[in-house]
Image (cartoon, rainbow, N blue to C red; front, side, top):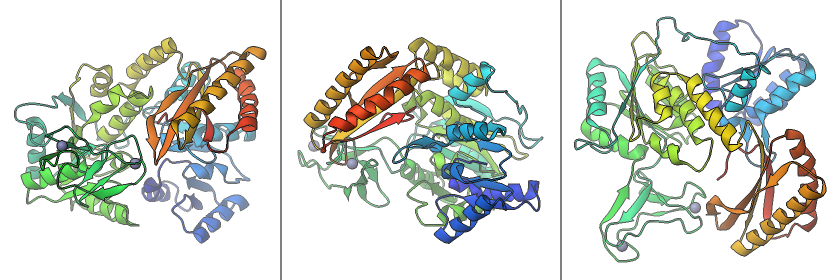
Length: 486
Ligand SMILES: [Zn+2]
Ligand SMILES: [Zn+2]
C-alpha cells in the first residue's frame, strides 16, 4: 500500500491495526533509521510481512507473495520523484501489477486526469464510494466570499472573522488554510518601488518575521530584514501579501485568549514536532490552526468544523497547465477536514473569481463536472492525457551556455524527427519559470507526441546525441511525463 506522505503513516498504522487485527505490517519510508529500514525491508523481502505500507520508494520493495497493490491518493504529485532517478511510483506500481498479474487499486476523491480518462475509456474499472467514512458525517457547505471588502482585516473578510468567533464561542476548532509559509511573500519599498530579490535566483525573498529574516524558498538563501531600502534609504518597507506567520499574528491579536497553532514546514522542522502538534489538536488543546498543505490530508479532528481558505486564486493564473487540477484536489482535501465527526462542517473560500468553474464545482463537490471540463480543454490544446510530454532542462553559470546547448538540442531533435519520420514535436527553447536558481541560469525544451511509442522511439536516440556532444559546463536532464515545469 503506497501513501503519499510520511506524516500520514502513524494514523494509517492505527487504522490498519483496527481494521486488520494481528496483520504483520512492515513500514517503509525515508524517516526511518537505517536499522529500522533494514528490518522492515527484510520483512518485505522474505515475505514475512503481510502488508507493506510506504511512501514512493516502497514501490521497489521486493514482495515475493505480492497479491494486491493499493495506491492511496493516487493523484498526489509526491509519488513522482523529481530528481536523481526520476520515476512516478503510481506508474511503476501499475507496471509491477501487470508484470505480476495482480490487481491494483488507485484510490482518490479527485483522481489524476490521466487515471480519470483511463477509467472513462474503460481501461480501468471505476469503483465509487459515494458516502463519507462516518455515516453521520455530511459533506461540508462551501461558500465563496470576496477577498477584499472595506471591512477586511489582515486578509480576513468580515464573514470569515465572524465564523471564527462563532467557533471559538462554541468550543469548536477552525483551520485557516493558506499555502504560503513565512510572513509575507515579498518586501516592497514604498518610496522607490524596490522589492527584495534573492541574489542567487530570479525570485523574490519571503519575509519571515518570527526569525527576522528574508528567505529564498528556492535556494535557501537567508539574510536579515533591512532597516531601510538599499536603493533609496527610505525606512518605510512594506511586507506585501500574506503567509502563515502573518495570519497567526493577526489572529492572536483578534483572539488573545485563544490557542493558535501554526503548522508549516518552518514550525515542524524538529523531529516529532508534527506528531506532537497533531496530538494537541486531536485533544482539543488548539482553537485555531493556521497551516499550509501539510494539514490538508488524512487528519481527522472531530471538533474541527470550520475551514477558511485564503490566497487560493494564485493558482488560477499559473503557467503550469496542471495548476487548476491540483488546486481542486487540494481544496477538496482541505474542505474534507471540516465536519468529519458528528458536528456539521463549513468551508469559507475567499476569492475574487467566484464564477470560475473550479469554485462552482467545489461548492457542489462535483469533481466529475470539473474533470470533464478540464479534459475537453486538454483535448483541445493537445495536452496530457491526450498527448505525452518529455522535458529537457538545462542549467549553467551563463545564459549563453544554456542557450547554445538547448539550441543544438532542438536542431538535433528536429533532424532525428524528420530522418526517422517520428510523430514528435520539438518546441523551441524557453527560459524556465524560475529563470535563475542558486546562481545557475535555467532553460528548457518541451517534446510532445500524440503517441507513447513515438516518444519512446525518439527519446533514446535524442539522449544519445545529447550525451555525445554534451558540454561539460551544462547540467541537463530529461524528464518523461514531467509534473513540474519550474
Ligand atoms: Zn526605496
Ligand atoms: Zn534563491
